[in-house]
Image 1 (cartoon, rainbow, N blue to C red):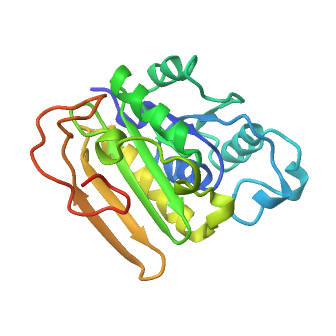
Image 2: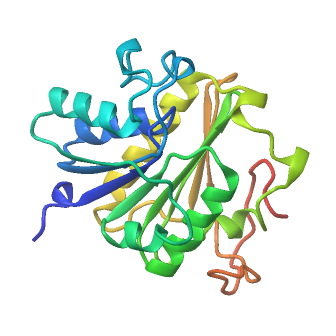
Length: 236
């Protein structure tokens, strides 16, 4: 039997979510991690993106993060991929790995990844943080996708950016670690599919909501068995 910790995990985005997610994966014993991000380290990244130092400013995030991951966990194989995920490369990226973690901060990219995960049959752990609230969900074969939760990406003023709404670094750290835990569990029997876990940084409360595929989902829709109990901005 293949050791699930030897499987390859793709972390898309190496910022506020991707840094703690990659650390938690390595701590959990995952031996193969690929990091995807086209950006370079900026001064504003240093307070809440744990892999970077002032000496890294101007360097590729994936290179700096991979260097520190390897130094801290020499048994882990880390592959840095300085690439912007788009419609032309997303399928090949996902299919090259056993599971992916969505640690991006762009709404359109999150829907792109969710759609591709369903299309390719590769599990994806969605995560998002805005202000002091965050959420994570495993999108796995047989489970609901992001479009079962939200009909389409919000547009204009309905989709505030992280810079506009602000993100508490500690909340991003919690959600990133939660994504890693979901990924490790999913490597063994796809545990946890269809569960949206939300975290409120103000009350320090966590809530888990059972979800089902939406009957009218354009990507993975089948007969809806139950309505979501709660999630901000969710379909009703």
